[in-house]
Image (tube, helix red, strand yellow):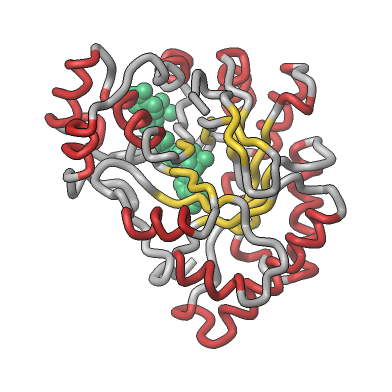
Length: 287
Ligand SMILES: NC(=O)c1ccc[n+]([C@@H]2O[C@H](COP(=O)([O-])OP(=O)(O)OC[C@H]3O[C@@H](n4cnc5c(N)ncnc54)[C@H](OP(=O)(O)O)[C@@H]3O)[C@@H](O)[C@H]2O)c1
């Protein structure tokens, strides 16, 4: 299917669809969230990515309410924070997120990070399995239209799939120029799971957008480095989630469907290294 704009649908494994670019809200100050999300919705974004831990779900909800867009035209994702893992805790955490958002279902709910062996030793797999069991039950109850994970590497997925009865439909991982995560992305895609790219511009403080290779490719297409970065992700079959609180950038980040990177340009970007970003290692984090 040709992708024509940020809302072009991509089919998930359960038959539902997801708009091919989402609007990110990490580090969006709660005080400006309503205004920023309103700007994104007015610019045309319909896919909004938030999380419990961003502490801005209420602002996202206010913007959704104020925008008055029919619920079935929106795609809202939130994430279960690490402190809320476990079967009962997950159910309570979803209810609290729904309440803050003013919604009665989510289009997608993600386990934000896998419990890892570094923190939980032999209990890690069981914690993830119990959390996932709640996700499956909430999905069957209709409170979630799709379920997935975030920051799960292929080995975390394989562990989860030992007890899962429903396979995650999405895995949201960090991918940007300089941090292509080629093996992990291929491993996730090979398991029939859609990959979303967080930090698609490298996030705060990265040098993705000022890199000279990126700048030369951008100039050749009369585009910006941010647009090139997003295009590079889209051409790999990934769903990027660019965040900006500025209207002009929000609009810029949507204009990525009127040019194509050549195989040579893709390879040049593939080869970039050390451009900053979080470069998160899910097996090593201790939060
Ligand atoms: N699952 C996870 O663990 C996880 C982790 C991190 C992020 N995420 C999700 O992924 C989304 C994106 O990641 P991110 O927010 O870390 O980083 P990002 O989208 O890669 O980059 C955001 C930064 O780039 C700036 N920016 C945005 N558009 C720009 C443009 N066109 N030109 C120049 N600068 C631009 C933004 O500043 P302004 O806002 O000032 O414009 C902000 O500082 C998050 O918002 C969140 O929804 C998920």
